[in-house]
Image 1 (tube, rainbow, N blue to C red):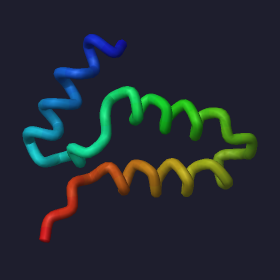
Image 2: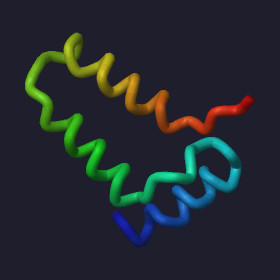
Image 3: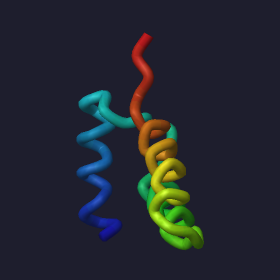
Image 4: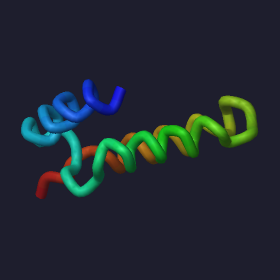
Length: 60
């Protein structure tokens, strides 16, 4: 997963779709942390949505 993920992340960052200050390992840690949150989807979904929105590169 790591070996295959690096080129995908680099391509998304190069296309200015994702921020470039996080590594793939950090992103996987974030996803894992969110996946282990106890609660139903009404509780977890806003957390996941906020995390994903925060990954987008900001354009000003």
